[in-house]
Image (cartoon, rainbow, N blue to C red; front, side, top):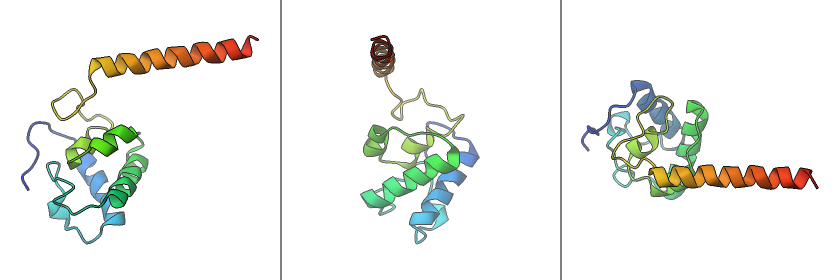
Length: 119
């Protein structure tokens, strides 16, 4: 497995993910857990991946959308959610249209909530 080279992540991001994964898959040698490592190469099943992602969220004090966990194939796909990590790159950042949809959804939710309380 070669190191992910398109994006540089803070070293603490990879350390944090290694700690999270160690909790649920201690049999994986730390040296195999690189940013470019594919989850299939690490032999992670879905349950272990989700548990490690949840632990990574907790340790990094961040939130990873469920859809991002579902579509993740490499460690880098999750590292991009580490605070301070680059997100606007070719490894799966959300397109602007998705961000606009989220903003519209929040706006509509706020309006619905205001309508509810103004009855």
